[in-house]
Length: 376
Ligand SMILES: *Cc1c(COP(=O)(O)O)cnc(C)c1O
Ligand SMILES: [Zn+2]
Image (cartoon, rainbow, N blue to C red; front, side, top):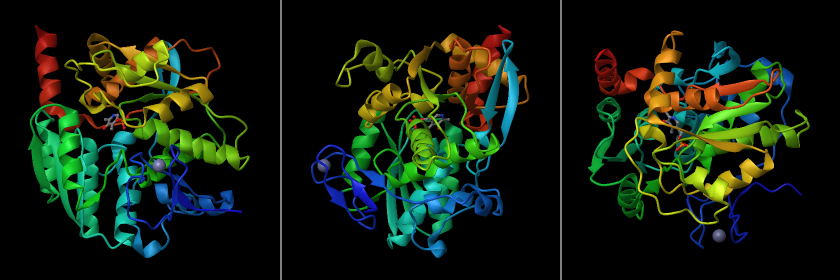
């Protein structure tokens, strides 16, 4: 029997896909079970956007789709330190990061549910994406951000017409403020809301198609809450379930040494998130001390025989300069994954894909500071 539904992996409760809830009655986050099948010829005949994988995306009616024709980002071959790598240029999304994949699907669902206002909390890019797609959908939007977020991202959120609320303290304090607001407003959270991951999974479908409908050996992904990491897994798992690929790729998570709870849990086989005091890092987008879906991430690491790599500030900085010399301008957070690739011990024939998650123009003031120190 096929069954499309929201499902809690903790207590096994199921809910209708059209339920506007964002968490289980037991308090846990939800996932989505959704069955579909791909017809490759149909896919090939469609526009080059993430919505060419329409069957895979659980939105009922086409008229509810909120889209800027985003996605199908270029997959480019580079050589770094003499090693070949395929980089997927996710910085080319309408708002400048891959978060648009999730926002497009999540805000389409909000439209479908008749929602008229959403709240979201973010260290920057998810806020930009939800604000832009809310603007396109004609839905009111409130974004909570930590006080120290890059000014470029704050400007962008406000220009889309969203109300911006700066929260003093940590990223976790920001999340608590949004949770309070979400008590009576639709919570368009890129972490809690499972529809977001139904968007980020299209990352996997695009790679599969761009590799002539085959699977790479390894993906190396910058990971805080894991919205791209988990999405990539879900997409390749969908393909495996339909026998369209014969194995899953290895999934490697990259974290900054300054804030690396998943690294610690993976290596010390911890079952609960350790209390860590996050230090300053230029990888602001993945500075997450308490990742909500951490057990899911650890399960994926185990299932795909992956690992976690940590990178220092120095390594992130030198990788940012290195990748930019190839004509690819990315934000410092995104450079963490290049640093991770350089440390990763690959084999000669291994096909490795690395996303460039965010655009450099988002963090001009940070880059100016780096340039100044570089000159001295
Ligand atoms: C959101 C984001 C990531 C990944 O963060 P997660 O918390 O794992 O979803 C990576 N790079 C950039 C630029 C981002 O905005
Ligand atoms: Zn539950």
